[in-house]
View 1: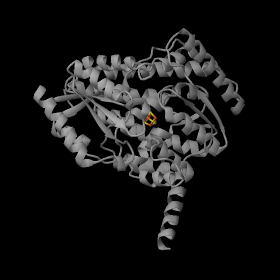
View 2 (view 1 turned 180 degrees about the horizontal axis):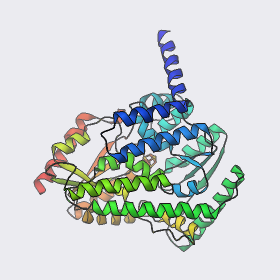
View 3 (view 1 turned 45 degrees about the vertical axis):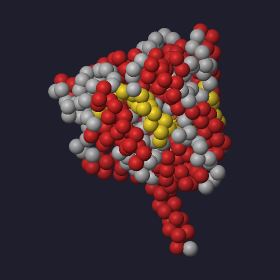
View 4 (view 1 turned 180 degrees about the vertical axis):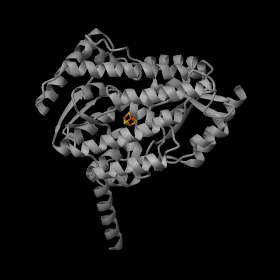
Length: 422
Ligand code: SF4
């Protein structure tokens, strides 16, 4: 009985905190003070993230839930407040709250085989701990799970769902098809918001995205330097959030200006992420574990650094503002993770050379078919070229799929090999 009352009370506290826009204001204020010695780019992200949730709860504009591969520049052009449930799940895990929502999802028949990012987001929906979407837009790009998850979300909240379903091949036919789909999407949104589509706003958003992209390219170029001037561990966390959620907004541009300055300063001062850097790692997959774990510590022990992550590359061209939909379609089709595995492999090879990589770590997120499906083939390919690769099985969010002992033994063995190779 006591347990039921406790869990009821816990539910009520968590739900009322999550639903109050005041909570996000408070997190912003307390966070800014608590993390006052952190990088300005981190504080900027904290401000951006909490403000987005706060505004979404205030419902001043229509809220759209979108998958991470849906171009945010288009959503900003349409005057929507985009929320990315996968990214929110990661931040919930870093606050050590993921178990609660995973338990909620699984006790409502969501399979443990479903990617944990979607289990947490589903649990949050079931507990009403996320701002209600007015519409849902996702793409089937890379992530198989996203189609079903977002379809389910739209049914749960009783709102409409638009799926951008890019073709497998990258050619003129695919481009034409996708341009058409994106134009239809714009009409679809206009109908639901009763707002006329503005090509001026679209051009503005793409212009901002172009400026941010230029800065990301500059940052990536500086990151070629040894010692690594930027922590890949951070690049897979708050910086990744901005990469997916901020392009096309003024905030995005401001963020990348700050980050570029920080990276440049580190490079000028020869300030590396680790002292006497010995091992440079390329990290494959767009995520890492977000709960407390020992991976980063082991890297520090071996003077290893994530020099770059495949997800943070700029693979798309600058938008031609006279042909905005073609540019957006090209961005979707150009993703190196889409289509044949040979595309991903050639982009990995390119990164290995560019970032003077000693070894590759592929994080195998449980339940993620898109990335893990090709991991062994990539490993075989790289082995033939003499590049060591380690497949690190785990879970970005669900701690039950993480074993500290096993992770330590296997990672240390990998770093021993890399140390001997040098
Ligand atoms: S980890 Fe894989 S399955 Fe999970 S949301 Fe990302 S792409 Fe989709």
